[in-house]
Image (cartoon, rainbow, N blue to C red):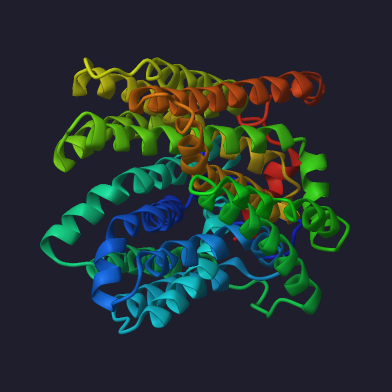
Amino acid sequence: MAAHQSPATSTSGDSPVRSEDRWSLVFAAGLISFVAMLDMNVVNLALTDIADALDVSQTTAQWAVLGYQLPLVALLLPAGRWLDQVGLRAALLLSVSCFALCSALAAVAPWASWLIAARLAQGAFGAVLFVLMPVLAATAVRPELRGRAMSVPATLGPLGAVLGPVVGGLLLDHVGWRAIFLVKLPICLAAWLIARKDAPRGGKQLRLPDRASLGDAALIGSAVAAVLLGLTLAPDAPLWLLLTLPSVPLVLFWLRRPGGRPVAGVLRASGTAAVNGSVLALAAGFAANHYLLAQYLRRDDGESATSTALTMLAFPLGMVLAGRFGGRLADRWGARPTALTGAAVTALGLLLLVPVDTDWSALDIAWRLAVAGVGMGLNGGPVQALVMSSAPPDQLATAGSAVQLARSLGFALGPALGTAAALYGTTEVAGIRAGLTLAGTAAALAVGLLTLHHRNNRTKDAAAGGSTGSGSTTGTDRTIRSRV
């Protein structure tokens, strides 16, 4: 059937283009996105249990979270450069296997040092998985269906982030802290089996990163670690913010090296710097809002853990319902206007939550969260489709790593920034409102950045005869599917 035809030739030379749409691989990308984001949040609730069980301080137990987050965020860009040079099938099977193995090792950890080492290794393989998600979804289907495909991991990822505390609470209450690491194994197995069966064979082989790549990873990793640690520790002692200062010269030096120049080149060639900025701002706003509202409901409003979880589920419910329509709208009307509309709806929902008050019921909070969730569902897939469709076909992983770094930094920085803003409130409720105002402002900034990108590319799109993501077939579209 013509509806299932795709270009028959490829210029990248990685593997032959297959004619059918591989939705099973899109689903596998969604599973990977879900489990990777679930891991970033499910462990937070177990820190007290881990500290008691392994007889360590709460500060040491905190490294069960930081040990995963730091290498994951720090290695995203180096992982993207490495994946552009190797076979994606082999990298996918290896990274899913090792991610699951590290999770199993964490579950049986007899000492804190064992657990931290397993989490550090898991974060490194998690970085590879984060970069693989958009590449896998983008290359699995025809260009005119890319918006729908990208909406799957873009929706399931934040869903995993939101469900993390819910899943963690249930497991801690009924099974124990080790189960929070084991619960991810069936999902990893399902993704591995799909990839083994349906991912095209052949193409480039795996190889170890060269020495220059390791040096680039050390530079960008140190910069990201400095920022994350500084902002994480700053609420207790503002002087920790000084720790973020070395990140600036480290990044500038990295941009002059072989690992940094291609990333800057991809952003220039695709014109998506503003899009990546919007992804970071929207993720930070969402994460700050989610963290502060959960704290408010439990501490200030006196809600039970179950009631809080049910209220917060309004966000992923709205996101899941809108995610499918977001992909379809992007495929029909274009990725840019759909992503912009989603960001605007998200900002509206977050700003509606700013005047939160003790007189509000759970329903008052839930419907506003649902509005923000609808916006995130409309935005997630189209914004990733926009980035991947604009990138040079031989640098898809690099482009994917940039957008995943932006999103991961937003998720990591949001709670710290929201907490810092809340400290300026004269009362508990005033502090929460200050933090929620920051979250809404970040979402509004995302709208502005997407608008700027839209205006800057309007003339380019008119000259090309159509907007990216609306079904037009560009040279990138004709070769993008050959990267799996």
